[in-house]
Length: 221
Image (cartoon, rainbow, N blue to C red; front, side):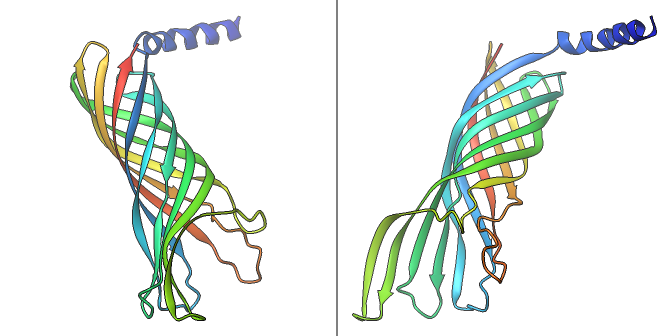
C-alpha cells in the first residue's frame, strides 16, 4: 500500500508537467568559426589560424514545462583551420574537417509568448567523417611554389575519429503565429578528446573549439 501511495503521488506531481509538454521539430543552418589548439613543439614559425566553415542539421525538442525542455540535434559541421609559416610565406595549408555531431542539451527559456530567449547546455558526441586540404607549398628540389587540393586519408594508428565534449548556447525564438517559429543562436562546442592518439613517445594532443552562429525554423505539435 505504501508503494502505491508513492506511485500515485508521483503521477499527481507529473500530471501538470505532462499537460504543458510540447514537441518541436525543425531545421537549422549557419556558420562555424573553429580554433585548433595544438602544441607546435618549438616550431616557432609555424602558425595555426581560426577558419570559417558551415553547419546544417535537424533538431527536436520536448518541453517538459513552459521554461524547461530537452533538445537533441543531428548536425553536419565543419571544424576547419589554416596552417602557415612566418619564415616561408609560400606555405599555406587550408584544412577542412567534416564532422557528424549529436548534441543533447537542457534548454531553459524565458520571456513572453511570442518572443522568448533561451540558453542551452549539455554534451555532444561527434564523428570525424573526412578531411581535405588545399593551398600552396614550396618545393626545395625545384625551388618553386606549387598548389594542391586533395583528400587526406585517415591513419588508424594516429587519428582519433570519435569526438566528445561540452556545448552551450544562447539565443532567441520568435513565434510567427500558429505552429511556426524562427530562432537564432550562438553556440560554443568545447572538445575534450584529442584528434590525435598518443602513438608516439611525446604526447601531441590536439583539440577543436568551435563557435557556431545558426538560424532555424521550428514547427510545434
